[in-house]
Amino acid sequence: MISFKPKQVTKKLLSALPERARDVLTKRYGLGQDNETYTLESIGQTYGITRERVRQIENYGIAAIRKSAIYTENTAMFEELRSLIKQLGNGVVAEKVLLDSLTKDVVIRNHLYFLLIIGDAFSKGKENPLYTSRWFTEKKIAEIVEKALKNVHGTLNRDDLISEQEILNRFRNELIEIADKQDDETLKRWLMISKQIGQNPLGDWGPADSPNVRVKGIRDYAYLAVKRHGSPMHFKEVSVAISDLFNHNAHVATTHNELIKDARFVLVGRGLYALTEWGYTAGVVKDVLREILQAEGPLSREELIDKVRKERYVKDNTIVVNLQDANLFKHLSNGSYTLAE
Image 1 (cartoon, rainbow, N blue to C red):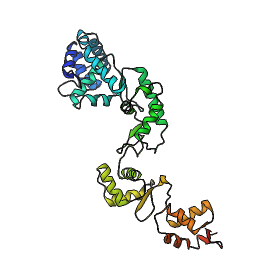
Image 2: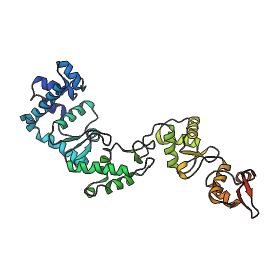
Image 3: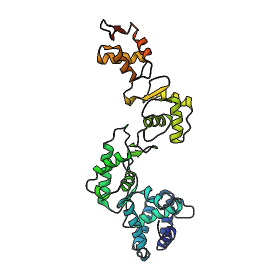
């Protein structure tokens, strides 16, 4: 994707420096044969100087390279990197996205990173709780993107899961100043800058710290599987779905145990589980009957059967039998049922 060889370019640029400055930059950015990056502290111990002095030497080395004839000779290379950032994100791109687009080789990545540090056309946005490390050549666009990402996160409730198109629509609405100039691929790459917004294994988007997005175990996989199915599932079906959707082994008994312990699920029949968010409530049929009558007052047998069937996958006769409990329910003269006093 790039026409130059990063290792060769960095070697030439470093040749413009005296030995100690060259060694400090080599160690700091992992440009040596061991590809290891070293801290200011460890480099200082090697030379018997303070970490602050090492920092000064590092800054001197970068400034000296930028002023060198060798730097000027490589103007076309820096322009190529600038054009790539423009192509990937209209002048703003997450560091990981940028480096991944260039190479998977860890060694080469170190050299490319160093070239970004050296290039005076490139600015780095440091990682913080809101955003990942990112590079930009257009400060104004970077500010607009970061503000928009923060605003999009503000529209999400913790348990929200929305489609990719919906997250792109919300994002575009926050980018009024520049929205018309961006295609979906650019927007998706900008979303990678946010540490607050994430995508789960099924491609849905939501808050990055939500278990619906940051999937960690059987319970979270099960939740996504049932939600994708859209209706109650038997725990054996859930186990199979986890394997099919996520290529993750889920033992049937383990799956059942996890469903029982998670408040996001409710048992609605023999081994059948629904999501609590669908309006189902926990409890046996008698509990459901009691809740319905408390909320709505006396109802006919047919009305009760209809409402319970929306809460539980049980036979009509099971509901009728439960209504016979005189300690809980009273059969009125007009044929309807109410709660016993």
